[in-house]
Length: 283
Length: 185
Image (cartoon, rainbow over all chains, first blue to last red; front, side, top):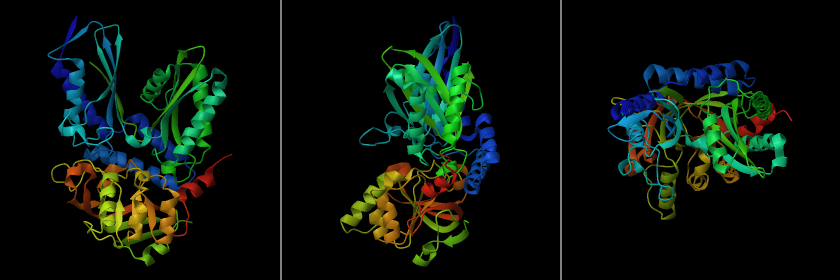
């Protein structure tokens, strides 16, 4: 059994949170540059130029890319042969998150659902983190992190279709979601689609699909084809960067599919703004 | 073809009348920041005939909740938040002299109508460009509701703050017209 110190995890998570807030990952940065090159609308092109410049300033001057520094979302794979010493893994993730948001001068955006009271002085600074645990073989802890903003989360949707809806039903549904969203989720977007499983499995899969690198190809050839078809359809909507009209509405479509019940076809669409702040470490 | 303007706040009717959806404007001068929680309180003050923390006449409100400033900086990252959450409050503020709003995303028909009726505009700033936009802010002072944290009302001074006209005084909407130009049916 491998032992990992509580404090080591705290430190790693803290650094992950701070680094992600100011450094746009290479895949997202390159995707913005490609979009700039391909955009036909001068207004949208100017927006994309600002976004590239923004990423440069954020990195060079260590300023948060966006004032919405998000809720902290983690997908964590815990090896069966690893033991955390000095505290629980959940507490370590939360403590690292809190320290990262505080020491990185990031915004605490977590509040109660109805009174809207910010929880920074009671529960903790931008706590609790949203954590999805999975148990795997081995003696490592694998941590995928994303700072998830509210604007793009607000337009995300899920629906359980009858099986007969098929691929066509899914394509139409995703088009409807992105078309209705228009400028609000800060395009150009990454669109995560969870297909199959149960209601909640589809939603979690659609979130996890956003962690994949933009520009990577789905390992399943059928899904890779469907991703391309949906991306082409979405870019015909004309929404453009920040919704000002243009050809580059979507940077990528990522699908995660699961086996599902014979009676149902669950579909979830989770939308990611252009500021795709995601990172991955293994301890 | 879109035009470029350099304007200084407070804005007059003459300043905003000529602006057309799609025009680029570099704003300088004073802006006031407010999100939904602050808007709710401002509207309550108007309804109760009480004095507002700033003069609405000719003013421009920026929908933003910045990150905390690092030591020595006036403000942290400060890009726009999604504007529809302010839709129910904006028309009454426009009626009382507000001339411009800066945010991102669609507005309701009531807000667009109020822009026409009271001669005002809705500007879009680039969402997610918080580092770049924060640098255009020279100074920042909390003037009301400090307990709201990032949602407090701030008086900020900006220099050449880049925005695009989304809804003008004629009823044009860049989100609808710009998109129609590039939509492939």
